[in-house]
Length: 338
Image (cartoon, rainbow, N blue to C red; front, side, top):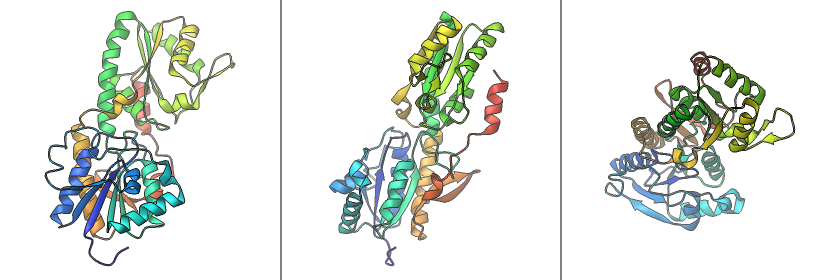
């Protein structure tokens, strides 16, 4: 860590975009400027550091971005940064530009990259949890999660209308990678008859029985929310012949076994877009400001987060060391309210 007073800071947004990233960029920039720091934004994440593609940020350049989705700094995957040579080049470029502090907004892959960079660069690195998946341990919520819930709920509410009209089963796949936070949240919010999450093993035979039980109670339509991680892991068909890794194929299997019309809807990347919800704007603004203040106190190698309504700092390695658990009570509530 440099002993002199920091003078220049830089920001990157890396990996999958998340609504609220712009609010975080704005907060970091304006807080840093109040401390007389120069602020730069590298374009397209770690790729921008390697290519030395950056813009100087000031109050004007981050005006009117709080409410915008996506990221003004753009994002990209960067295979070159995963190599020793790539990280060394990034470190050399940061030294050449006299960057003292780097703020990394992204998910676990971005933070793993930040930790690897620290092995070859002596500047400070502070992370912010920017991912709709809400799967980073050490923080209750991540930037973008609340907006993803709202976006998915809006779509599912519309699907519910047509499900009722045609008395159909709808299997709705949501994002979240190998974590079920989005599926659990939207499942509770839309009153889904069933939620499938990677954290709880599922069997198609049990799913068929649940659908039949629902019909027996008089329900003529059914919404099943499935996390993409469940599909990625695969579900064995009832006859054991195949492992299903596709929501459309799973819907056909359910239709064959229940005799009821079943359709699959994959919400996909719509969940990453849109204007950030109020809670994401507030969270991003708070964590961005806290990131700068923490860096000026000498912190490095940590992610800003919020736990039990209190701001916190989480060592990078702790954010992925353990699988972040779902809320057990929320799982119970969903099952009780079906």
